[in-house]
Image (cartoon, rainbow, N blue to C red; front, top):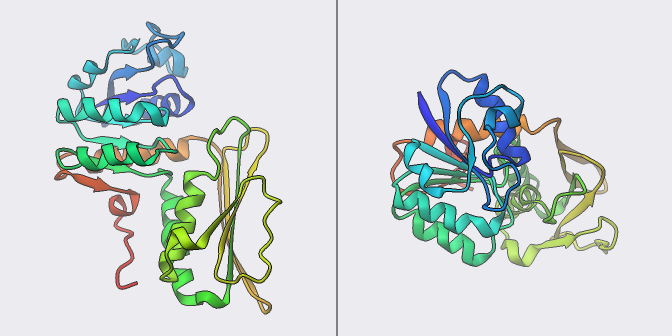
Length: 272
């Protein structure tokens, strides 16, 4: 039985993970951690997730990580350094699905990865990670002659734009075309303001925030002769929760380093 600690346990993703654990015989939740001011502190995580009381109260004490074999983090980017620091202190592997990390926070991961294994991915969905590989491969075959546009739609509560998934799709496309991502990717944060104006070499991300959409991503390769579209729809958050649990199984006993879901699923594309 794999003992699991969840940080951000009372958030939408944390509760989705708790529900998925209920259906998995190889995991048990031993720690459910939230921010110190969270209104649900003290309540049972199973009760909060709607799966029944499991005897694990929601706490703000990071030292509870010591009881776990692995940690899954879905919090807010500013909380990641402290959570990762505690994982290092207790020598625990950690899976990070939190997005929107700034450069300083990313550097914290780089330093921590010298001591513990870390899986970090903007999207834990198994199908999305297959999409990452398909996009990179398609870009390498179609080349600069095809315009690349990425449309992403999420719920109105999502704080970051573009989504981490859309950004990684763009980075994979740039890598496939052997371009420098920073010089190639343009952000259209309201989905309407940027026009290509025949700049074939640019990769444009169009972001939309509507209703309660869990996550839609479409990558379009287009020229005057034809169009190829690769699309993923997430119907509920369990797609990400199940992927995070898959990563948690995989990362245990791995050597220190930063991994992503491409590593977890052996989807790295070589010789590109």
